[in-house]
Length: 548
Image (cartoon, rainbow, N blue to C red; front, side, top):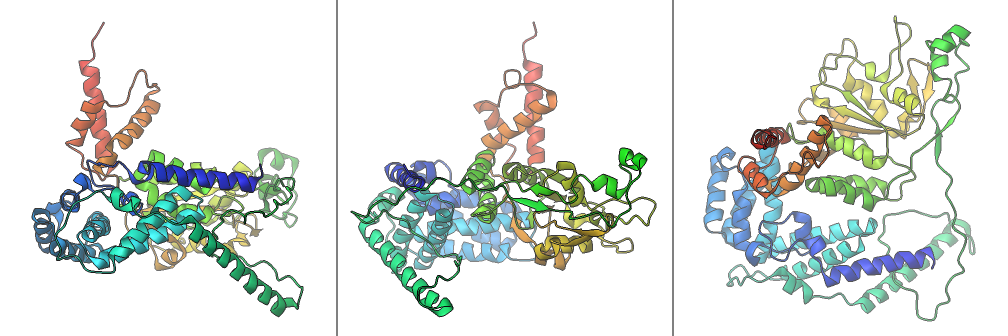
């Protein structure tokens, strides 16, 4: 079977599985707690199949005591009587709070999540604006999933978008609300494959006509224009009946990508035998990679990247999905410069470690807290000692052209410029075009650092220079919620096992009663107090363990 036919069969299997049983994407048919946004976009259910009950529970997750009085009153009104009017009001107030510069980051983040999620409840109560909002989000998410080749999930999102778009045609907020499962509504809408197939052929033929016209304009009749890459959505359905199968070509094994980071060190004096042995001259130190084509590590499969990351940290799925967009069709593992922002203790540094591991890139963590000079970019040999930039040192040690540099707590670097500043030094490293030929102060020549990935963490954006923010993608890292406690606790137990040198037989995961006990005292947010709670439970185990 050809690769194309095999891929088509996998896609068909994914869609068939989603149509038979969508719960692996949409969550349980009768959830006991409100579902995450991505599951709702695919057609997830409300608690008790009732949008009002679901909204009251979701609003109960907000830290009411920490909300401004106006917002707290709106939340209380919507919780006690969830209807279209009160939910509209509370969504408006939550949106204002989420975008207020005066709001604490954690409060703003919780408000934004609740504002987004309540759109589903409001749409179910007949609001056409909320239905249109969900439909647009579902079709956008479906397009993203198709690019990642998540065809089963994309099918469910497209079906959901069609159902919600039909609700957007009229206002039903004044009509009686009759709770029913979303699954029943979704299952009544089945996409007509034959019509979509006809649409796909029309799209393909239209592209062929436009390409032929473009070929004539560029090179005359019969000339082929150079291929143009764009972001158009390509729908690949089966061949027309009777179309002969194309001859199968032998699969081509792509040559590994390489990059010459240091082209030459001929301008430096030849080191003495003593200097070569000690490697205490720049030429002796970097000779092993000078003029050498270093391997660029291959990009992981975007789908696998998202699934493996989300399995260990389901609350971070939006982060992994955003990062995975850089991997679609990528020739090697590389991400745009990104800063991960969230309150202290929510696992940003652990996220950087996880991302670099999933990318397969060696990681170097650089602590920016208190950094008061420009040594990140290297130091000249005119001083008593010198060294290369942090990325170039990592490349030398790993002997690969692509590495990951984690910059921890970037907002805490010093703004004093008397000895240079980290914020100023980073600028050319983050511009990919400039990074292709960066002058390194230590080896006094241009180096190609364009394949280096930079991931920074910050508790807030205040303190980060505007020029840096302009060059970095900003991702807000969601905090784990109480619904994620079993997964988070299992991760923490695994860390404690590693710290103590034990295995699962000697230190098993928390059981149901222990999880429930911890859950009474941790309602989401920072992982540091949660770790202390888990360690307290483990200490109780040790005290109560039978002695022989």
